[in-house]
Length: 115
Length: 113
Image (cartoon, rainbow over all chains, first blue to last red; front, top):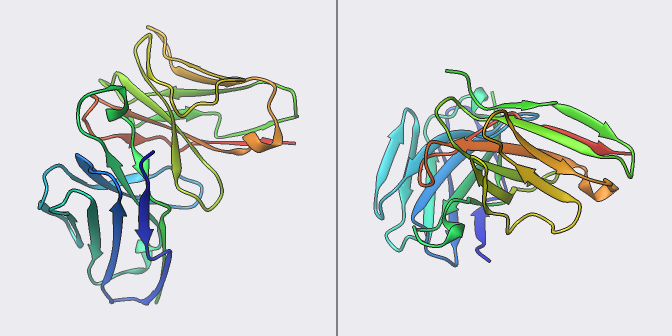
């Protein structure tokens, strides 16, 4: 089955620093999604990417869909304490077959921001 | 517009009992997905349903687990004869279409004692 390798596993940064995390896959994905999960809650969608090479921003967040369609990265600029949480990448296959609805998730990046 | 609703938020069951987890999708969404998350791991796909149909159940164990999404009412994930290894957080997501963005509920945390 598809696997996503997400790195780094954890990050400890100072408030105000920029953050970068990425996901790589052995499979080609049609869609990449980035989620943030707070303790005891469900994942919240941050950014969705639909085209190879696409670069999309949402406030201080920027994500890119790799040109090979096998990778994606997420950048957070000028981090603040409320950025603390677990960030997950997720990929979805292209249309065709019954597997193309489900998401495959990375293992997550735990972000800690020191004030 | 209310988000995805799940209940209960926490469920404790003894080994051998049944667990029923409910999910009400966002208004206008007819596609529902169930995922399971073990501590300190990512989410793992279990099953994908549309109204009254199971589209993909490739991630769901063949025994003891079943899911439905009836014409009226919430989607139900049912686990019969629970074992300790079933303890996990179970998340439901919904989307307006198969290629649409998936929005997650707050999850049900199942503990089997």
